[in-house]
Image 1 (cartoon, rainbow, N blue to C red):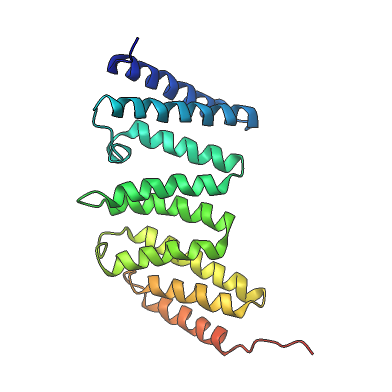
Image 2: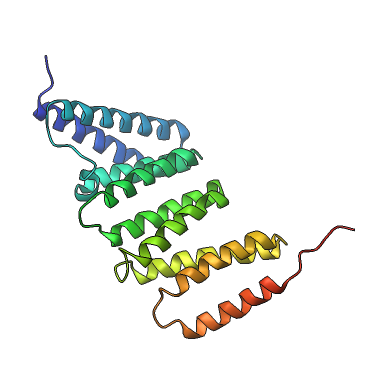
Length: 217
């Protein structure tokens, strides 16, 4: 008997309740339960494919407007992080960001929140690989996102990049320290009322650039 939209919606609701309850109640983070959650999420995706085949409008825009779909993506991200499957976690967030950017009017507030999650996951997985995400935001700040990107999110990215730079400097990796500090300074120009902070950061950066790279005897 072919699936009907009513049946699909009922199955989706049951799967969502199952996913949410397992994620919210699994305080001990049992890997077996996390795997079941990911299996249910895949079942949910297949149901959406069936709905699409029935010529029902199910697009990537739904993850922006449908809070249920957004929650499922967050659960998928959290499940992958709990299992230390960081590559899959990053791909989940990238899908969300692509959907947000595909809309005619981009919601940079929502984009910024998801980007924070992506940066956090990417830094755990591979710090150098996270640099393009910072560069992407900087590019948007210079163009479409000017005056639309939340100030607190710009500060967050600046602080994260600066701290990475200082960590590399303390580890004697001066080349990486300069790269990350330059990224932080790129965000600085988009933060309001930052004169004192800018002077302090630029002075520190000057000292970093003046530091000689030690050579082994």
